[in-house]
Length: 94
Image (cartoon, rainbow, N blue to C red; front, side, top):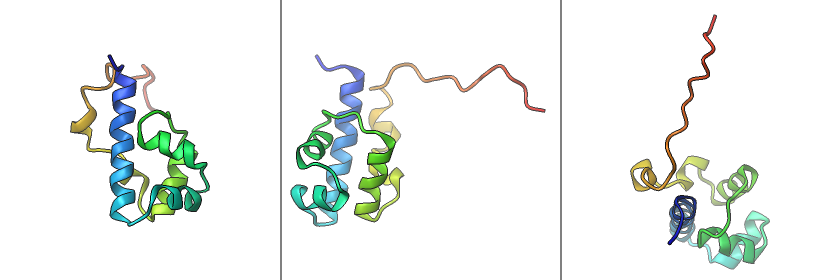
């Protein structure tokens, strides 16, 4: 059984693949354009890699899209993640 993290990464990889295909890139050519190892990038699209923010930025720049376009809609993965992280720090703003 896949974990929530794995399912979320699979959803992310599928969205990145969709955007790449819409732009007309082959996986190999795109990895070269993005400056990423071909096998690493294949793992991204299969949901096998937990991407660093810098690699997400590289992919977005190479595709000519905003980083947010690489993510699936929140509805698609909201149940795949652990409990939401509370942003309440307990510190009052002045």
